Length: 103
Image (cartoon, rainbow, N blue to C red; front, side):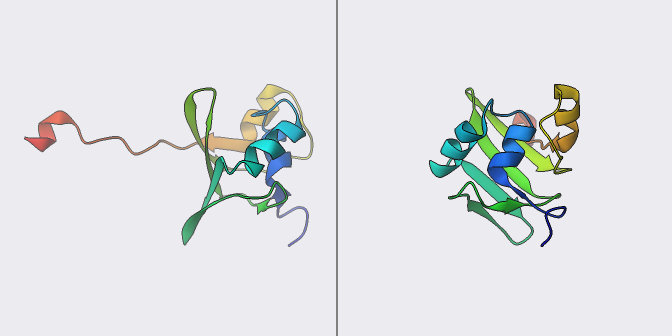
């Protein structure tokens, strides 16, 4: 796997501006608060050095809300917010069935 194909998850979370510092992102991951989903399964990340690739899904709770994103690009730097938003796309959590369909 070349550096262009993968990125450390703590670096990516910092580049995507979910955390102000890389060390905050690393601590969050060390605490087991980030899940990675790929075709074939979902795992709780245990080390900040774990590699992620475009197409991977990440789910974590941040600021009292659930964040679910798909990695679109790895990025090369921590740029402005507009650049960071291009690194991911939001995933919609599955919604509960509506009331009418249960009756």
